[in-house]
Image: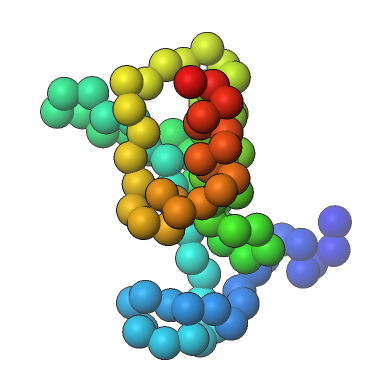
Length: 92
């Protein structure tokens, strides 16, 4: 592994905090909620894949371990993602 592989990638992309395209990092997170408890269970950086594809991979990782969920939520970016919709539809 070279020295460049040890650093987190930064790319020119839409940065919501700045309200413009600039060099930044955008994260995709997965969390489980039960009553009044919340636990982050996965995180990934959005650079080369779509956010929906990252979310679909996170959902696959979660459900393939035998975990269950009554519902899955997300904002419009994830609701419009064919990758995530197709995966969730395939598992019922």
